[in-house]
Length: 420
Image 1 (tube, rainbow, N blue to C red):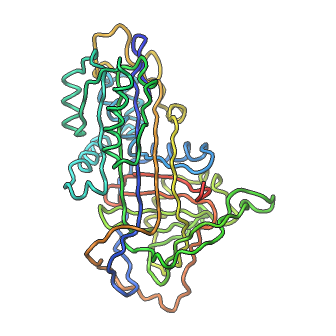
Image 2 (image 1 turned 180 degrees about the vertical axis):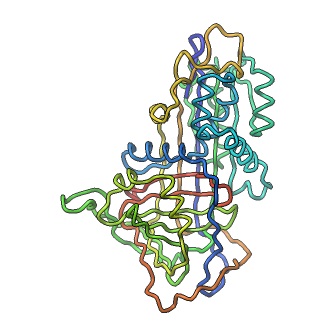
Image 3 (image 1 turned 120 degrees about the vertical axis):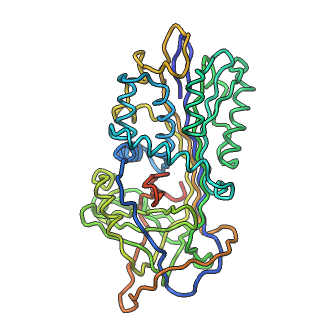
């Protein structure tokens, strides 16, 4: 992404990498559920859902984004914006709905993620760095603020040597995404650039309740429409993971016309919420119906049920520009000559402005993982006489990775074809 400045640009990027897996671990041999306490609020995720709906609706095929990563990048711009300026107002509105207390919570959440014990950072690692050309002097106040509030750092690089500079920045990105994202920055990206603002998120999650590897079988997944009478068609055979005789938190939303299933991870109060539209509904129709309030209510209404799960393995690599999306959501001034970002760097004849915001992300989901030691306590629920609910994800679906303790949407995506 870039910011134009006196004939030169500042480039901003967010990159994310996810590895989601099940840990082959000893697990209590009864049908236990895992304690679930949905986030009680106050929520501040209107912007998150605006990004999710805008990006996923327009993306052709599979896609994955990180609303939290986008917000992390916008906070760095917010800290560099002029006080009481229109740029600050737009960024504040996006980050918090205009509520300064919500910005403080976001700052605290981002800092807590980054200051986790080293062991937890093996599973969730969030980093920010401002790379700037050696000719640019970063304001000391800005440097101090982003370091204290976000644990973000700055680094001077000779952008005139574009090949060496791109290699140095890509090495940092690869290191902070455990090698999952490489060669994001091309030498051409640095042509006439002044700064790169980069956020990375790496997440490796192990299912708390593993999918047995010996239960994975080929099954048909229905991708695109082939008949006017049905929203789905185009079957293809892909590996499906299966769960039987387990208790999960689940809810069918009549309002949205979709099933919600919670698949918890073993650390950090994180879970994947899989959202499967009813058979008569397309994914885009579901996206159009989604509202933050409807999702919050569904999460709060989830209850323990015996669920038979069939979920395809899938992997996604996705990249896009977010400029148009953010403009649709009311962030426009930073992309114009009227952008007010004087707290980042001064002394230039032309003020900084953003050219675009780039993102690249990847996700891999299967039933494999590494050993873990502890069994999980849970609450025994008596649903033995009930017929198990069937959650058969054999058509396009959404997935959300959610911090239940903080109410943050770390990732969101859609699967239209598991083998795309």
